[in-house]
Amino acid sequence: MEKYTVGSAVRQMSVHMANLYYYITKEMVAAFGIEASREALEKAMVAFGRARGAAIAEKVKAAGEALTIENLDKYYDIPIAEGWDLHRTYAEGRKDNTTDSCTFADVWIDKDWREVGHIYCLVDIAIREGYSQGLPEGERVVFNPGKNIIKGDNCCTSVTVYE
Image 1 (tube, rainbow, N blue to C red):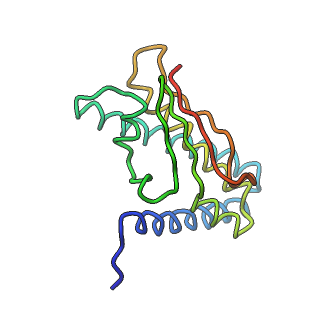
Image 2 (cartoon, one colour):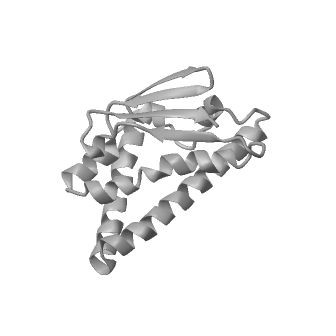
Image 3 (cartoon, rainbow, N blue to C red):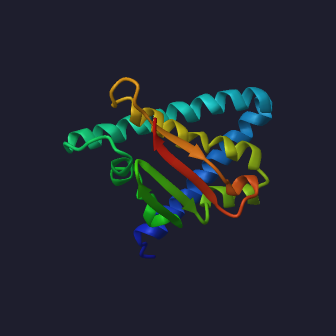
């Protein structure tokens, strides 16, 4: 039996998740067309992300810690840093992130599923929205995407800030 490290297990599960998303969305597009499927998928990804973000916020609060950008990462719901090639810097109320490779993008590019695969990326914005629900009125954590591998860039970049 093969022994997995946390990183290799995260990568392997990411391949399975990307394939699951591909096969479900492929059937949706075949049955309902791209536009109707896009609308439903966007709603689903936003709901999924908001639920994840809210759950992360609850873990942070249960630990007696503040809902900060750093704690969003510290209490994240998957060990993403162990399975993805990412580089983070935190300074003055912001996080800059560069991800050198994306297992999801690799799967969807290989299957020529870039357009529908990219819809999944809405989850990153929505996680911050769900996480922000626990912040005082008028405060929020915002994810600003930059480069994206599935769109043809050599990496994914983002900036997360307070607004």
